[in-house]
Image (cartoon, rainbow, N blue to C red):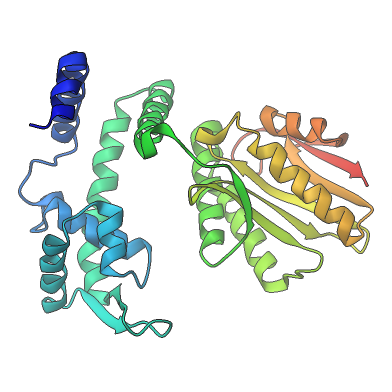
Length: 314
């Protein structure tokens, strides 16, 4: 054992024991000790490799190894086996012929689908035993653990970037999930978000419209859109801040970016539609100068809600 490890054990052995106890508890709860993950013939490491390939096309082996912290030789054996079984396809990168890009085949996606369903079901069963407040506390604790262990708890600054391929699916998904979890809204909210992002992409005018993603260390933390409502009026849409990023000023930063862009683009007013229950968003709008101009009750998302229109004169 190294001198550093000895020092850690000597000065904080109760902390080490506590972490190891939690690791034993959690790995047992999520079934890591089973031979086949998700009642399949795949090991946990193999299932994780399939997961990475399912969520991002055309990955290199080195990118997968870096993401999962896998030994290069071990990962190479997994990928050779996957290729022999027809689960992945390999192509040369057009940008760099030295790189081999990996993609799941149709057979690979079919093999992975039951694993994804199993994982979702197992986590769902674990959460089902907790009340809503308990679920929120559990997720918040997990997020805190992740943040503390990511780079020793040190994180970079929050930056805003324009949208790129894949962002719109994330925007729709997170709106649907968060509003269902936090407010009990039904799938019609997700359907509306899908319609909004589809119209944005079809009719996108880069001179007068924008979508921003707030991210830190490559992780998306929030989003907002500014779209053309008329020649003089812009509409702010789909403001969202992830729970882990609340309190960091992400929402204010996104709305202020919209305001600055709208002024530069020549708009005379920004309008938006929100709801009385969204107190954090309403606070941001009030703080950035928006005024409540209209209210109307509705039940479009499975709840009786008070919709509100807010305007900002530029």
